[in-house]
Image (cartoon, rainbow, N blue to C red; front, side, top):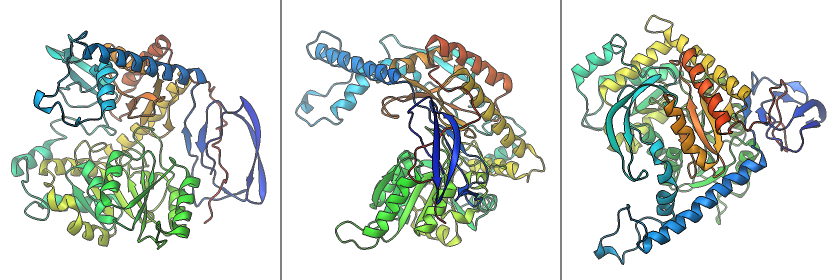
Length: 555
């Protein structure tokens, strides 16, 4: 497998060693680097890892962009301290809440820098988040208009509704977030039959026949022995990982894992070590060291080693290198926990996630986790795998013991969407949605590349991060897009690295070509206006290389 190659020259010729042989590679344009999985072993095609080309884009911006980004944050910080000084001396009005007189001597509840960042940087662009939506989050939605009279300290609603805003931010990958009466007929029936809540945990009075039906369907959909569903997607990770590992165990976690995985790992009490994102050499080194040296101080063998990864990384748009990770976990006898929150339904020929995408067996993954909040237009999550695993979690999962069960109407929505994907509703609509999502994703990504934007991630990922870099452009981008009736999600530091602020688009099967073209035309115009087209990459059939000390994995 080939990884990132440093941006050294515009063109270069490389000779890379494959075991005992060498393979000469063509000239490559190294201004944009992408990762491509090469299924070669000693120069011979090796189909046991990758069955198709696997390309990801992580182009580096020109140096001046990083410089101006740091300058922007520096200027904002200097003015922030100046304004804090003016507030302290009464030269500027204090709009923030202040401590009561009786608590003046208390230790601050929040760290000073967190308060500083909120007061002086986040507040300048706060109007771009938490916008109230007053319709279903489908391909278009309605937005409640709000304005501020005090520079984003407070907001007031005008009473006006902004209609038919193109939704490029919701995780509605397959378009099941809908209000069609015929489509939701079964959901309505279950709502009338069961009501809105269960008012009990799964272990007490909260297991309904709808939950049993859903769990059997999830197991059938994934091709595993058993599954268990939970009422909250975030808690599926954070409350179940502590049930699987504890003190004396080792967790190897990708550096870009979701907060729910991070929280679950921390709550478990296990030792946590981080490997570089999708970097197999970093992961293998940690695995090797764990086997050789064991636990700190005592050097006893770890009780168990578990690898935590995601199917699609929601801020990068990259797809996990599952074949290589499975190869490593088998080699070092570790367990694999796969979070398919964004990938289930979104990739794979029939929407069965990254396992199907890579043509692998569900048995290759020890713990399959996913959520129903994205592709299925519902709520909650699942853990699936061997029956013994699921039976263990039914007894030991904190979510099963303490959390309220999933709403029956929500369970029916998931059943409806999953049956549609499986063709059990007697139609091919589910398969059509999966294929439409793939077409929309490739079309949208290709057009952005051609326009000259820097975008991250895999060509098949419906999560499309478009790099903005400079802090001042975050607010300008989101506001200008809303003026064109397009709703987007913008993300900046500390949710991303300080130099990699971005807009994150989520492509949906429900988006029409006209909607995507409207968004692309607006982006083309705005990219010129805000000077966002940083890419130095001209479209080429030759992908670039990732730097790598070793280019293959041993079986």
